[in-house]
Length: 90
Length: 387
Image 1 (tube, each protein chain N blue to C red):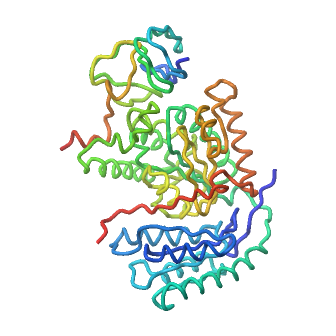
Image 2: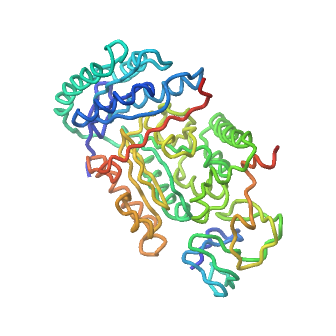
Image 3: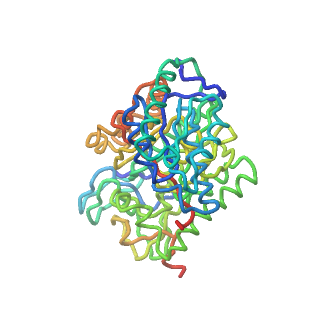
């Protein structure tokens, strides 16, 4: 129920709503889901440190803005993009 | 299955036979609409522009209008102006005439015709004559090598990057192999994925140009002093699970398949190469589609996850949805449901074959959801201030 696109990825994609405290198979990983992850959203496959790059499609899609535990919902509340950041260049 | 279309006098090939009523300025919108309402087979566009514009911005508006009027799917055109605008009707008509010699066309200038009543009457009369001529045009065999197929994604969600865009990418590769020109656009949605396309540039010049247009687009976002997030990805994209522009772009770029990038062209410019080309447009769906239609694209493949109704006034737009829930919920606006991929019911290759089959049918005249509902979007990308 979790799609891992590239072996380098540290996040997977929920192909269904993942309930809190569920165990799901994500490629070669078994993830203990800590909180609800809605359909289509990202779940961390392992612990990710603040400042570490978030990898999907085997490519950088942004970085963690706080420490993220494995099995967490990864979205705008704990990661941010690195491009088009006019808010940081002023 | 054989392809058919309308052979135009200039050598181009149309797959539709539209009578286009084209205002060159906002002040002519209502006359254009009134004319199109009375002429069978006619379609009018409207827009806010054509006056108080400067330099390259005025040029881009004129190029877009003239390009739309010259699209091979247009069988006849009525250009409507007020008479005192920056983008004058006779000058747009001249450009259309030079690229589509022999096409039935007329230009109306409201001030010269003594006001809107007479302008509408003259427009309807011309439109009726055009209808009689173009209704006699017959379809003939055509080839994929004579077609320019445009790619668009809008109302994206996570399924776009894992299902519909990769499936359309496989279709893009097939079309390139068959000799078509395929246009990938939406420069803002290349931010963070430009290195993938740059590696596929046919030469160093194309590579440098590609990187320069993406940098230019990112610079425009930076100048606004805010994060690009919220504008792109949009709130709906974010709700659908896309967090950053890089993530959206990496999914977006799959549409272009794996073919070499042959050239990078300006907004509303016609490609000069076969194969995959990149047009520098914003991610705004309607501005992007308008640019590609003005560049001569006869048909558009539009992927969506959250669902969007919009098509184009001159080209059929095939809506391809990778989200099974949306495909059901917005079925009236979706042509092909490939939500089957993430449900595990169909492989990506099988879905691509289904898309290919639909393309052939739509080329041959099958109407799309957007055509049936007249969901015709037209928006010109502005690059300068209004004076």
